[in-house]
Length: 277
Image 1 (tube, helix red, strand yellow):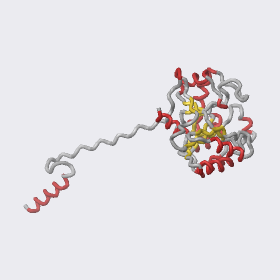
Image 2: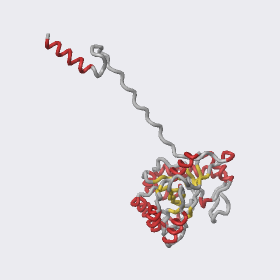
Image 3: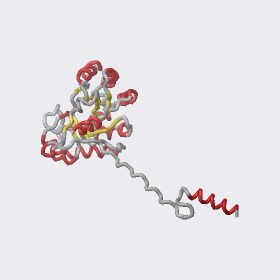
Image 4: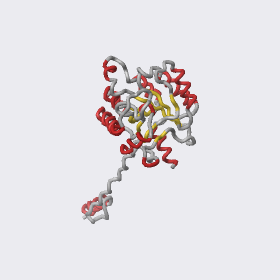
């Protein structure tokens, strides 16, 4: 009898985690925690008449933040030049950004991603960076834009979508819904054409002046002298067209950090603008 009572007590002790002793009913399994929905990149609301919104800089009063952006330019017609040895990539620049731990937004053309798929994938999968759209062809969306060939209006949307397809084919999983017009040239017609894509057009308020510049000090002075809180700086990620950029960045980054600036991606600035609205 004593042995039986001891066994019964042991059963009750174990059953306490299930329910009242002697019920024999296991507790209901706790429902799995709800997973948070995946966060979507911040975008701006459409502009007047539903046109594609245009972003130039972040808030001036929410701390010293600055976004370095790099255009990975390559036009649809430059394949022969790349085959002949001209370099439109700049792996040393990307390595320097990683070494300095500088977040950045790379505006990439689809043609560039096709030419350098391994680099596109590496940049796109690195949490330090975000990849945004710089068109497929790097042809202009307006007339008289630095001598660039022009995309016909009826092909503007497909040019953007073709770039996104090239990114995904290269292995860029989550390209951002941001678009930079080649040459920065746009008009109402171009904004209307891109409305169905849902992108936010991203311009800048600081020109790095690195295109074809060979003196890194010139580029560094221009950037350091122009940055304000919330600034977007435009630079380039092509060795042949921007040979001094990597050396300039090595001066720009510590210079801005000494002034109390924190480097962010464009998405953080856009999100900060949305928080103000």
